[in-house]
Length: 112
Length: 114
Image 1 (cartoon, one colour):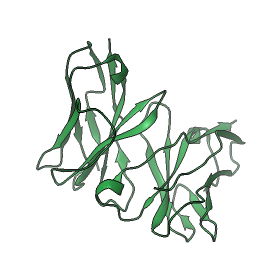
Image 2 (image 1 turned 90 degrees about the vertical axis):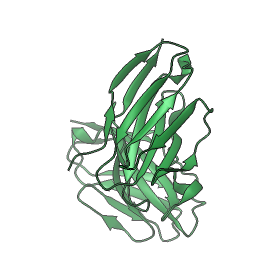
Image 3 (image 1 turned 180 degrees about the vertical axis):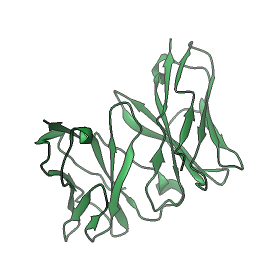
Image 4 (image 1 turned 90 degrees about the horizontal axis):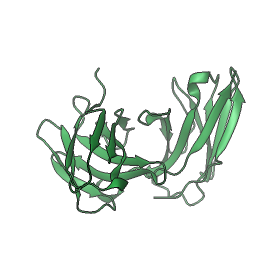
């Protein structure tokens, strides 16, 4: 079956712009989580959605937001981009939260 | 969630077993041990998880000590493709709300040499 699909794979944006990243979970998976990975901070949790509701949120500023649609697809948005937002953004989905998460390949965002 | 401690790196020879240790001395009774790995520039990959009994799947075996304060992930016949960062994570087994997130540490870098 198809895995977790993230688009786009690579993105270059300018400081001050905003960006939207997309994640299509595995069919039937209702939980979608987002993570940011940087060389300095490692993998950090952004937020989790379950059945269109944000269930959990990490320690990121309000510039980072997300949503989940009725088909479980999710988007995350970062407004007023800063250089420090350059990172690999990973999406993960799960059918049941007591099982393992399946991660996508990520979107590599570069802010210049 | 309980904190985990892993050595920063280890290596093993191709074809040999790789035994990756993890300490989680503050683990609670309802917390499971999860292992993920991340091959360079890819998303993390779920490997295995367990509560207190040893677990085995097609990828690896997980051995948890009786007091549950430490565990070992075993890759029985390591190959060059197993070179990756391996993360040991402790989390409640059926999380909801605030405890649903995965907290990744720095992990252990496994290098498999030819």
